[in-house]
Image (cartoon, rainbow, N blue to C red; front, side, top):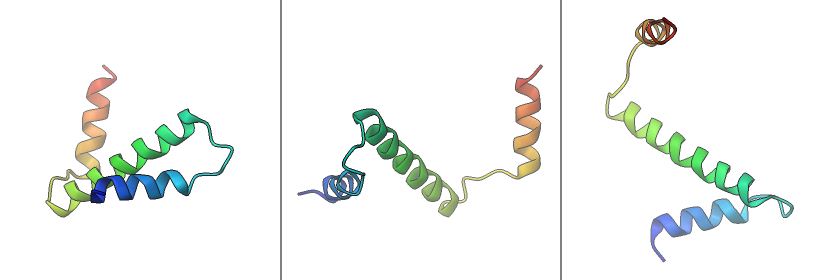
Length: 61
């Protein structure tokens, strides 16, 4: 089994028995987003809090 399949299988198995499909999919998506964020951070693909605040303000116009 590939590493990705093993990782996702483990995540699914760790979910409560009464989890819905939607809850499991949300958990898997969250895991992927966190992994991407950590990879971006490690690669230096980050912006400052001030820059993020500026961008958000520009969306609100």
